[in-house]
Length: 354
Image (cartoon, rainbow, N blue to C red; front, side):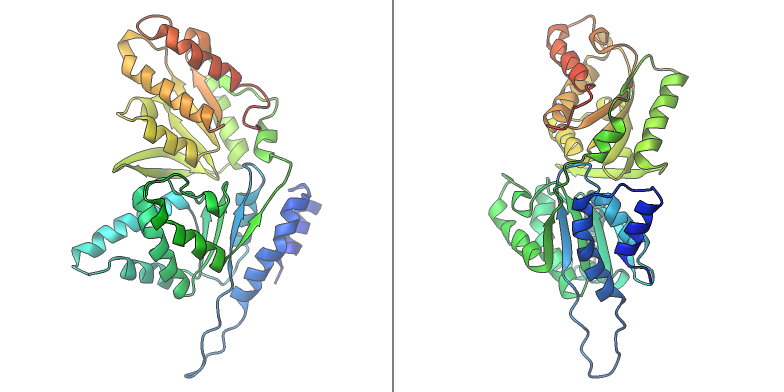
């Protein structure tokens, strides 16, 4: 069977990948896990199941190829029950499963939910592990402790070192044992590549398309297809203070939504901060002209742009007019000047690299 190293080398030889020392440095960790998972298990009445290998917590800056490496690994892991899922989506499923388990009257809903997950997979591969919701923070420790105890191996990517997960979160002291669990059951590896491949793919490219018409929609589709290698993407549901914030399309840190979906709904700063945390690039379609008739939508748009700007998220959008011409009348025109300025700055080639 082809090792991960051999697969990577072949992709480089075929021109599908550029050789990257930071990526090559983590390949032995993937092969370590692969060899352990593919090792035949000797069965017998008194034989103890082998100790599962340590997982992998792969962290580093955005666009370094963390998710790509994980995808290649999972796709080539034949004969092993493995699941690759975005961390936010997985936690949403867990909350729903806990809700159903509680209906049965069990004292501890986490135990049966963890057992069900462990029965279905040997490897969980998470994209973008980050904790922003207190309900997630309060259950992940016990959930993952149970998964590890049942032999589930976890690989995850993250933009944050484990010690920075749920940083400044409410009741964070209750979350700290989960950080210790990560360090105990997973190898923590920083992928410190100087190259941001996601930025490189956008470098020099137009990221603001106007007006909104068939041509700009085709341009937006072309950007999506390039960044996702043609993937359709799947909806991503973010749970924020009991509300669901949905990105209709999401793939490997790339999100896509229409203006009305994010700004035409009663959402606030916390929702947009969660979006900014979940994506590294956001494609926002069909921004209309703004003014008295859609003042609430305009205020939400300002808040969304502020959240994306502070998080250094790359924005690609189609809009009815240039940034300075989006908001021409009504209360808030002066305040919108800052938003227009930020929209201009976010179009620059080096945006998001700082």
